[in-house]
Length: 253
Image (cartoon, rainbow, N blue to C red; front, side, top):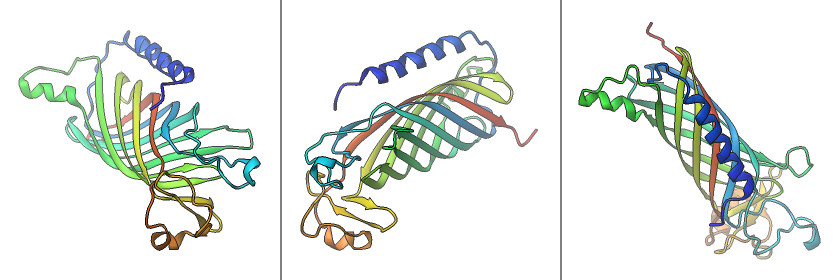
């Protein structure tokens, strides 16, 4: 995988600054039992190979540059997570992680991951060993999610993805905590590239994840299973540092 660009490093610096600011807090930040809603905003970056989302006008307008490596970079990223903490230890969660690039340029593109999983609050487990965490000023959340993945612009790819994240937050009030979060999504895209969402059409991808431009050429997506027996999708990793705010709702008080 390629090295992180300077814009990614800027995102990491932003996370470090936010972490320094919230370290001045000294209030109870335990994972509360009950419902929570978390919103994050930050920077996203793809790395890997073959995620070609823009057409190359020099090659016939709707044809990608074969062998082009990867990927959309410098993307705006956001996330939305809804979960329920069981006794403050862990609980189920549903989430959406999305990003967009070249916004407002006429060549916009985007990617998204949506699914469900579980979140664990490891600090709470220290109480099982007899350590009181009620006044501990920090909370840590470890999340894992599996679901649907999509990315593209002129060419789009769909599939599934695992998403892992770690969040470090401080409780600013009984109903609100804030901090920083790092998301890492590992998508597995199908061996088919969409060239027309409205027409439900696209091209097969070969074993190098390049679009097959002849035999069979553009086909109906419903026939992809029969006409695209070999090949693979782009191999990518999506990383996103974000500032995160979590709203807590105790339904039992």
